[in-house]
Length: 425
Image 1 (spheres, rainbow, N blue to C red):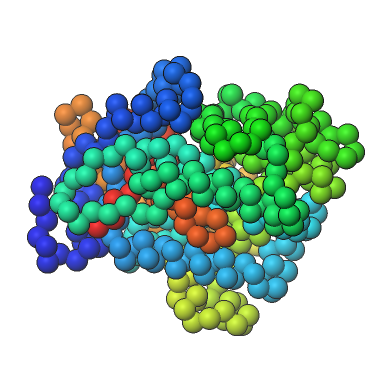
Image 2 (cartoon, helix red, strand yellow):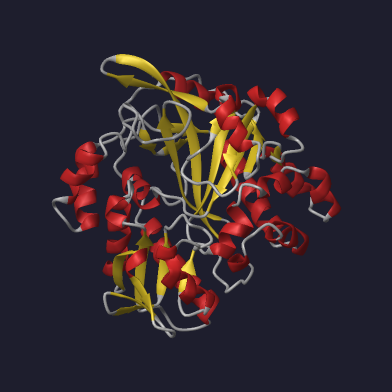
């Protein structure tokens, strides 16, 4: 299809998302690339057997200006996070384990946006952002469509994402240790083989091994700390790529990991300090408060960029009655939440759920409805929701991707949906 050349890039991207149903995914190329990347021929059968809707056939179109606005928002959040006033505020509600800063900046941060008519809105920040290694391979298995003015965001069309990810882990080591390189890296989660994104762990494992690092995929409960070093199955672990979502490492199965972290015996990334500083949902109440930020001396440019953060407040028993009255315009998230778990649109709330939310532990965010992407499913044109994620390290975008879905939250279980590459108009 063609869009008039005089149409603005933002309008053109919107029109393409509504009207372009070109299949850009070369599934055979994707499968071959995944086999090469994973180093395992059986990987494909397992992946597509258990994750049939992980990859959308269509891209999500994004304008140059939208991408620039998202990158400006990321830069503004990172700048504010370095202010002593901000750190004192957000660490005041953090668990004790998060107060010490060992140096790591946090591997593969995820900045999640909804594409609103007024521009991209930052709905949350995540320290355990999943999908990057899968999206890197997906983005390289795409066919061009809809003219010559389509470009790809950083990290999408070459092996540079994997190289950048490897360099990121090296940098995290140096930020804590000061010199040398990690000899062993463990990708750690709870029962990793049962995790929905376990295929991503396999890809990350291979990226590290191909670059000469001893790497394992480890169950957090099987780690051992002897008072001087952390190990898994008798092998010492220098650095942990942490995918555990117990952000305070408070559960019994995380005792060894927590003890090694507290002692500085392992480089842990992302870690409790990173989560407290960047990803606790209560932090959005600070980032969306322009008066407070102005009083701290935040620059006019960063204040303008942070207008993309929807107004957010912490739910308390005191403000709960007012929030209940305005609930239809709000979205509720647990302050330490992850993976769209236990989140609720206000107009869908039952009084039973509200009774739990009103006791605290949640934030209320002004509802920003996701944009839409039209897809073809079984010969029928259907609408799907979209959010966009920038995977970053120290404020620099390593990769951009979208998630196409149906329902209240992203789920990677929607026919026609899944991870989708970004095509920049």
